[in-house]
Figure 1 (tube, rainbow, N blue to C red):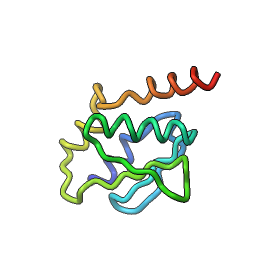
Figure 2: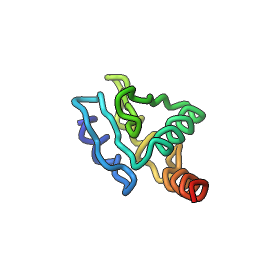
Figure 3: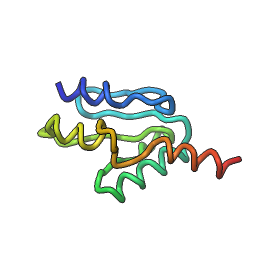
Figure 4: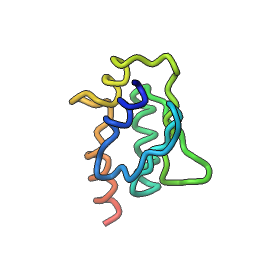
Length: 97
């Protein structure tokens, strides 16, 4: 059930694809810069995401197998996400313009 919940909540125009099996996921975003900013912003908030060596637009998501629905919702699915993807995208676009 947690697998389906992650995939259901990870929906955004800048997320191009979700790859993976089980809870080992890779979120593909629109640019390498956005991937880096998102990973670093989440780290500031206590959520560990990782870069993939072979795909610079991918963000590796590997939560503990014991993650609860509540923890997923608090991290990914709440109205007040710990990161604001829209804000990061806006910052990325204005700096690259």
